[in-house]
Amino acid sequence: MAPSKSSIKNLTALDSAAFDCGVCECPLKPPIFQCEVGHMVCSECKEKMAAAKTCHVCRRTLAGGYKRCYGAEHIVECLKVPCPNKANGCSAKIARYAQSAHLQVCQYRPYQCPAEGCTFADRHLSALKNHLKNTHKWPSTKVYDGTSNLALVDGFNVIIPCPGSRPQPTDIWRSFGPSVYHMLILKVTRESYGRVVTPVHIRARDAKECRLKLAYETPCGTHRLEYAFNVPSTDVSASGGGGLSSPDDRFDFVVPKSVQPLDMDTIKVAFSCWYL
Ligand SMILES: [Zn+2]
Ligand SMILES: [Zn+2]
Ligand SMILES: [Zn+2]
Ligand SMILES: [Zn+2]
Image (cartoon, rainbow, N blue to C red; front, top):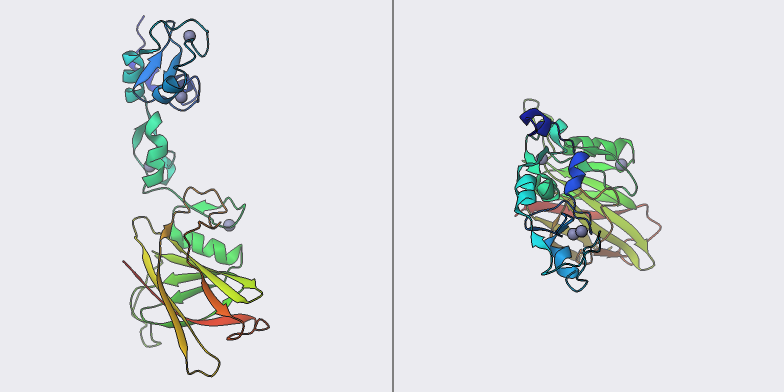
């Protein structure tokens, strides 16, 4: 008897594991291949197994290799599962094999806390901001258009760029709202020669690169050293904690100890940023 429409609808994610590649266990995506009794493999594994000349499961000789399995291809195209971010509002239904690609770009994916080993995640950047402040005690500073003078502590400093100029005490009618669109994390590491500032830009969904300018003055105040550089967005959505571990292409800003001695608790830097 043909399965009714509702029984297909109720096929769970667990059942649909039957549509994983028998070798690499990834969700099968077209083109799909099978041995003569129906053991399925993905196209990459089929290429890798070509020399074996026997099926990966039943060890039957593969006369002419694995054969294309159009029926299974049709099923995996139709077998759509809800996005794991459904509870956050994503209504996308995706073929299982396309799920990991969708999760990379899903507008509803949560921001994962970048602190090593922390599992906190929330779809609002403002919630992550509060979490970093309350749970990890990372100091957070709002910055406005123009240059801000920051005192950075060792470890992590959270910088929240706000649109517009710094509100004046008389600006009581100005509402900035609770939204946080961007977040920069300046990681300060103490080295024998001074302190190293490593910036990380945490993207808000579709934000692009951030241009950052950091500067310090020499003790006599006569010289100013300024560096400007682009900070690519770091996606902490899917990193699963430890998201700030360093890619090699990250730019570091060094404040030498001759300029700001190591016995000072903080380093003072002039900061400005804008989005490209
Ligand atoms: Zn495979
Ligand atoms: Zn087989
Ligand atoms: Zn989604
Ligand atoms: Zn955390």
